[in-house]
Amino acid sequence: MSKVAFYTLGCKLNFSETSTIGEQFLNRGYGVVDYNEKADVYVINTCTVTDNADKECRQIVRRALRNNPEAYIIVTGCYAQLRPDEIIKIDGVDAVLGSNEKFKLFEYIEKFEKQKLSCIHVSPTEDLNEFNSSFSTDGNDRTRAFFKVQDGCDYKCSFCTIPLARGKSRSAKPEEVIKEFKQLLDANFKEIILTGVNVGDYSSPLNHDLTLDLDRKEKEDQDYDQEQDQETDLFLLLKKMLTVKGDYRIRISSIEPNLLNDAILDLTAADSRMCNHFHIPLQSGSTKVLKLMQRRYRTDDYKKLIYKAVDKIPNLAIGVDVIVGFPGETEEDFLETYAFLRDLPISYLHVFTYSERPNTKAIEMPGEVDHIERKKRSNMLRILSEKKKHEFYQSMIGKELIALFEHEEHGGEMKGFTSNYVRIKAPFNSELINKFVPVKITEVGENICTAEILLQTESQKNSLD
Image (tube, rainbow, N blue to C red; front, side, top):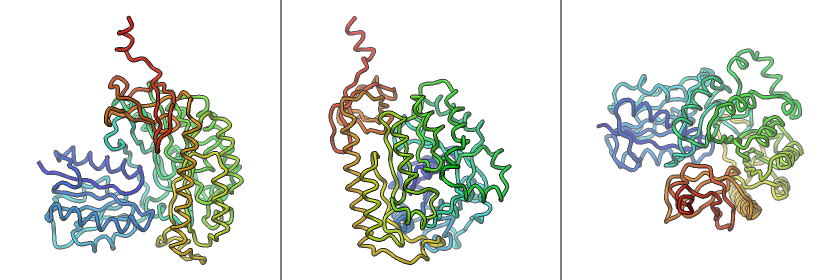
C-alpha cells in the first residue's frame, strides 16, 4: 500500500482543508502515516500570515526528504498560491498547487514520480471563485469538528495577503451546510466549530451573486453602525442550523467586530446550543493605528461591543487578536493598546508580531518598528494574556458550567472544554466521554481548571438502587 503524510501550517481552516485533501488519498487506497514516518507522498499545506510560515516550509520539505529522499513532495496552500516561483526553487519540491487546485490534486498529478522539472498549477487570484467544503477534527479529538462554511475575504486590511491568496468572499449554500452539518452530527461529533477566512461575512450564494460591484464598494464604505443594524446571512444560517434536532453545540471560530451584531448576540444568549464564547479580532487599541490598518471600526465601537456582549451573555469568554509593531505604531500607541486591553472584560489574547508581507500597503508605510521593540511589546501582551486568562478562570470558581470531555485519558484524568472555552480536567470516567456534562469549577491551575462532576453516571445510579 502506498503511503501519504500531511503537514499543515496556519489556521484551523487550513487543517480542515488538509483533511479534505486526505480524503482524496484515502479514497484511492492510500494509507495515511505520521509526517515523521517514511511515506511515498508528502503534502505540505502552507500559510502566509507571518514570515516564519514561509521559512518553515523549507524546513518541512527537508524533513520529508530525510525520511524518504525519493518521496514526491507537494506544496499547496496560501504561500503556494502567492509565491509559487519561490517554492519551486526549494530542492526536492515536485509540485506546487494553488488554492483551487489542491482540491483537484489527482486531476493535475497522474503519477507521483519525481521528474527533472517540477510543475506549478496555480490559478490567478481573480479566478479563485470556487467554494470547496471541508471539515476536520482537532488532532485525536473525536468530539469537536471544524466545519468550513466560508472562504476568501473582501476586506482590504493593509497588512494582510489573505485576499490575494484565497480570493473574494464566498460561501457554502445553506442547504449544503445543513446537509453536512447533519452528517457531522450523525458521525457523533458534539461540538461543531464554524470556520472560514471571514466567517461573519457568510452570505447565501444567491444573495452574493445579486451584489453588483457598485454595491460591493458601498458595502466596504459602510460605517460600523450601519453594519451592526443588519440582520446578516450568518445569523439566518445559525437559526437554520439550530432547527436541526440533536445533542450538540455550535462555536464560531472567529468573527469580525463589525459583523457581530445584536441578532447574533441575542441568539447566543437565548439558545444554550450556541457557545458563550467569541473570538473577536481587534488588532490595535489605537484608533490611529486601526486607520493605518484599514480596519472597519474604531476603538470606541469595539469597547461598546465587548461590554454589550458581556452584559447580554452570562459567563461569556472573549478572545482577542492583536498585532504589535505595525508601521507607525509609536510607544504611546502601544501603551494605549495595552491599557485598552487591560481594562476590557476579555479572557485571553492571540498576539501576533507584525511581519512585512509582499504586495501589501503596510510594507510601504513609514515608521518601521525595530524588531527588538516588536518582540518586547509582544512579550508584554503575552504576559497580559496569561493574567487575563487566569483572572477569567478564577471568576469561574464555584460556577456550574457544561463541559464536553474528550476521548483521550491523561494519567487517570480526562480533559475537555466548557461552552465558554474553559479548559478543564476531572477524574477519568469513560461513561462521560463525548457527552455534555454539568460541572463545577473548584480550582484553577496553569491554563486548566479542576472540575467536579455534577452528573451521576448510570453505574453510580445503579449502585444506589
